[in-house]
Image 1 (tube, rainbow, N blue to C red):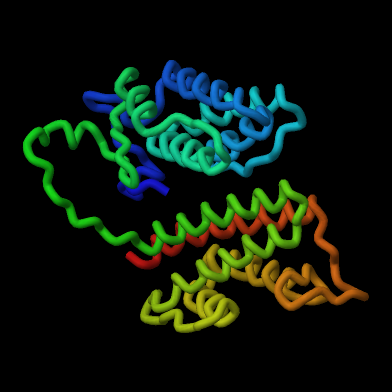
Image 2: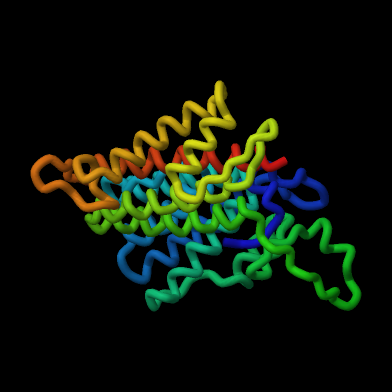
Length: 290
């Protein structure tokens, strides 16, 4: 996960001397062309899905495997165009997808190549891992580099990083035919995220629970009468079902007589629901902590 102003994830900087808000169509085509060259190294369909998954996350969508290689190619182009509406997220997605490939023994575009495309098309970012810098603000600094003390990540940033990594693992588990483990991975993130609400106060009442159920109970109390209260009811209902031996059985084992065996379609449904709840809770956490 690249480091940049977290507000860019919701609203990229406006255009100035460079194109900062969105990736222009001609640059999308060039990044797409680089991906096509990467896919010549082996499993073309698999690599198209690899990049499609990265751009789907950047566009805020769930990644579904395409029904054929030709559809994967078409779907990738479509989701790249959608992700391009937010330039920082697009660049982060392309960079991170490329970074994973050398671990598989494959060559992928590096930082120099990515920056070259940005410079060629007037895109206002300079990639210097782990940072993504805005060229408009950096261009005035031509003298000796200044040592900058790195700002520690906020809870929201840490949570987003955990979420992204976990969703990637969950997606791989689904693809590899491990539905129960995929749901378990997503449920773990939901439980972890709940701890970020500990200590938050609303109208003088604080969330003090230590574990998921306690924290959810406190949140319902302090958020009474709001949408958050209703969402917590849905979240705890899903959590309880998935945890129960006679439900999903992903935390306490499955009741072999009455438990519900999670199949691929159920796993996809549960993972999508958990992901949507996590996105909402992240937004609410940012709002409540102000």
